Image (cartoon, rainbow, N blue to C red; front, side, top):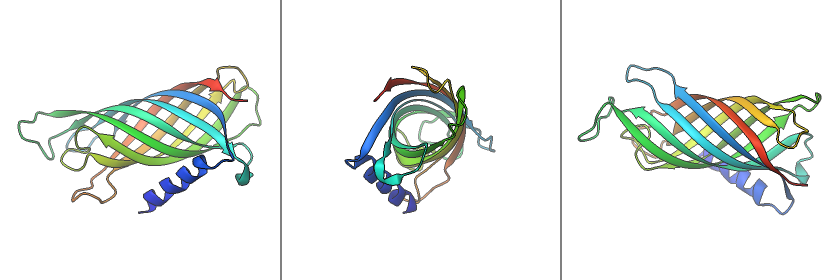
Length: 190
């Protein structure tokens, strides 16, 4: 329930009339879950995010925004094998997540940042296998923006993501994914 409340809060932040978009960013990520007795899962994604600020927050160097992501997940099915199943399950998923990002802008060549985000995820098959097609993805990311004042700054980051159904299905084992992310700003708004 806390995840739903946080998602609604971020929707309200980005939907307000005083939200000012600053950038449209594109990211590519590749990650893997920790090895378990059932195997590990891999996740590759492409994400498009709209980041900006809201006047009432009055937090310096802090952005809020929304991101849309398409992911391909390869997960083990040995724990709960579906009928006619094999050793792995290939899944396509779409997600929308809302985030807050704190940037440290003291330096001119690099800006370290930390962001937190969460949101719903829909998939064509159950993630993890035999659980639910509707999940939530919560994440924390630490990274750097290289040449932040240039026209197309580059992002590099490391992300921890937790994917689970939040207890809405009978089983909720979840998947923890550790990802490397690269990206760039594609549009800067004035």
